[in-house]
Length: 107
Image (tube, rainbow, N blue to C red):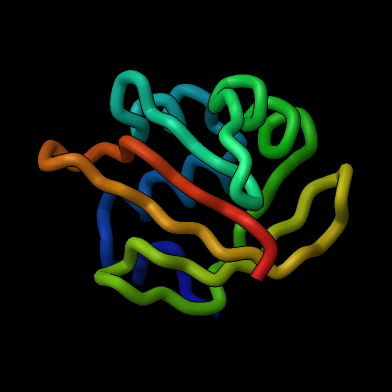
């Protein structure tokens, strides 16, 4: 497992920290205005999806590995709805250091 403090990309690090802390405000601050996402290839509403899959279900990310400068993660993800699952996360980061898009799915 990679400690969050060791993740290469600061924007991705802020995202993972916010998820693991259950901190909605920090999570929103990590995202660019109008950020988009997909789950297993299907476009999702960021606010609805994150509330259901992260915040109201105690989502947590244990990062197994990173690549692409820290913008692609393999994660042991868990929440109270689905339990543990091995997932991939890909992030698009803006020049100002916020996340404009993330894509997740089963690894």
